[in-house]
Structures are given as structure tokens and as C-alpha cells.
Image 1 (cartoon, one colour):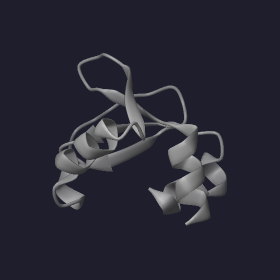
Image 2: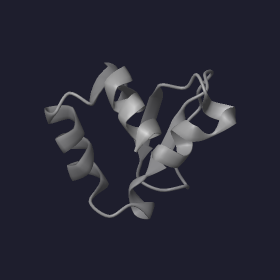
Image 3: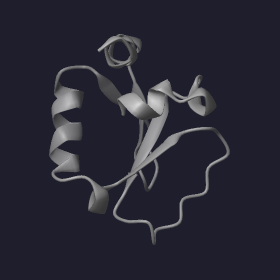
Length: 80
């Protein structure tokens, strides 16, 4: 996440989705991050912990949850 947020292409991006793997198609109209469960060990558990600590929240309720970084978490990632 730190690398993604630091990327010049995603300076204004604050939202992300979690998909099972790269075979799942997700169409979005805005600039957001996509993370794949197959690429990250225990990703769902890690996301749950971030939610519990208030670092992220579910931004939109669709078939695929869309999450938003808090500004505090974004700053923490950028400055660590």
C-alpha cells in the first residue's frame, strides 16, 4: 500500500477494492487501487484489522466492497 500511495499515477487515489485473483474483472471509472487475495497472504484479515483501528472504512456498499483510506493512514504510509 505504501508503494501504491507513493506512486505519481495515484496521487489523488483514496479508494481500493479487494478481488480474489486477477481473473476477476472489475470495471471502475475512477482511479483506485486493486489488491488481489491470491497475491497477499491473509489479506482479508489484515483489512479487518485496518478497519478495526479506523485506518480504512468501507466507502461504498456494492457487490464488491470499495474501501477508503483515512487521511491519517495515508500520511502514516507516506512518512514511514
